[in-house]
Length: 365
Image (cartoon, rainbow, N blue to C red):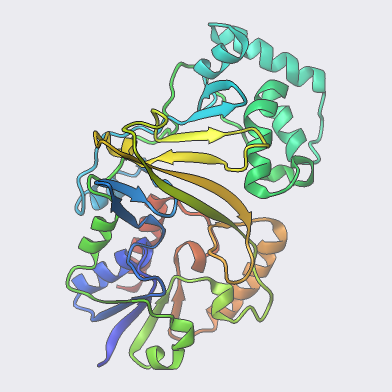
């Protein structure tokens, strides 16, 4: 059987492209290495709770076209992301706002907060930040950095902030209002019933095969289609011939607990370096669940090596230059288009993934 398109990867990018191509009369085959569809937005039901298997995913966008598009496939609730940060025995609201500053310094007004931050920055007198620590200190002062940035960042990247480049933190959003809404986007929420249902609807009527490793069965699958949309790792596609791009990986410990409410919030960050995990997700709070039990996931950031699951690309200069070389190889391909987070070696929010997939659709069709 011959297909117009073979889509390697049943995540959001691949599913949107397959849906749109099928709508235009194209015959598509979607395959995925994992045993399920949905990629990293896959949710599975445990104890009646939609569990985000690969980490918390909160849909947010300011693009009305993308919001309207995704709402064709799900009804979204009114969840607003308002994380909590725990530093030792202290608890703070995120993002950094007047609730954070009031708790930290026992103050009430924006003017007081601005004065404290400005005085701490002035005392440090950092002219040209040489590393991430100096960059963060020059943006937010010592207290915010020490309690809410330093430990969490070091856990995320697996190294001291003095060893990390300054550009990783280009800015630290300081809000001088009592507003715990983490995102500035106009539209946000969680799909009722989980993200997997969205991908199922996108792939309705399209042939899907899971548990298939394209790279191990390349000859067979390349022969099935005129065009390939590849959403896996671009360096792995070329067998790392120019070297491996760098990623950070994440390990999850998920457990069901015999209580109805473990932490009172969906997302709680642990910012002290000595706590090994970066955050705990309590999944039921994404959908305002009333179940008798709860499910939590502890997240541990880790170094990535070939064979591990890649999560976050390390978008520094060295990796950028290596990716450009892989792009040159990709440009010479006659029938393969690379896309998605791994194909483009880029961290994408979900709305940007959909936008990129639709842009490819419009370009082709």
